[in-house]
Length: 462
Ligand SMILES: Cc1ncc(COP(=O)(O)O)c(C=O)c1O
Image: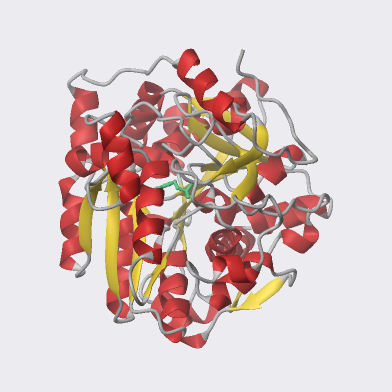
């Protein structure tokens, strides 16, 4: 019998995170202060983040030690197993070898605790009492709720309203871990009130929820804000995944030709692929694919421009692929992929042709999720199904080309609290969302007056 799971012993848990920034062929452009248009400095960020995270945000060190207290907590679920998907390969009748990294084994069910644990720890040692955050599908909010509980911090989560209603179990998980969860837009913040005045039926978006959480953090004594994706320090913490994968691929005696991850704000993708991006910069030939929803095609169609991370324009301007901070994506079930922007690191990798991007419609992702569940057994999160769908596309391509490719993908989370989405699919209630061109034009018009990065690149929206 061939080996199905590749485990790493606890002694092989990575002791450092990998920082791609010093290795990038073209340096990243700085984040800009929304008022002055000048590069943001540590003092600008100090009201919202603790200093160790601000330092990591701009660090040029290639490897950063993981503190012992975080390693201890990582051991609750890490190292995570890697699997060979024999049954899926057989079903697809492909010569490709398919491996996947299972990040769904964390207590919260996804990759999100890799950074939540680090962020809760650095806040705790910096004297923060309470962390405010946003969440889409609830994966990030539940991960942070769990990690705040483990480090004795209060946690307040603004959850995108459409997901709050679709996914009550994630709210219950947050409450079980002691966090307080409110649907966004809410009447509690000025940002929420502004949105509700314009559109009382607003389904919410990650951009709006970020505005609410930042406002709550800066107006509450002892509170800081935490972001579950997009920022450089989040990508850094997630590399614990890719570093484990490199060791596991070595044990398997293979090396990936293709690596795939879904991309919302970009963190699970970045964490999975960055150590391999380093190999690619050093000469390896790897096809690295970020997968996004066709209804929120940030990387495939959005320009590379400066834009706000939130809707109400409170955050610094980030150099990134964006659909415009006022773009509200269709209410697809993959709530964690409904974000107008993309991590500057992931955006820079695309500009430098180190990765490519693919957009997949909702129905194809759910069909892929069913195929995966009915072959490999695991029920994936709707976000993760985007990576599964791209993997199936690549495995079929390998068959057509007659090539024995090695494909590795990141199984970023399980879907056991997303079953309402599966029911909608199984009963024919789901549809693909036509891209509202006028809405994108309007939203991109809003970023026209903003400064342009040196590497500005127009999108492909006609
Ligand atoms: C399971 C899962 N995968 C992927 C994502 C997308 O986020 P990111 O691109 O930051 O990994 C999310 C976000 O909530 C998620 O819950």
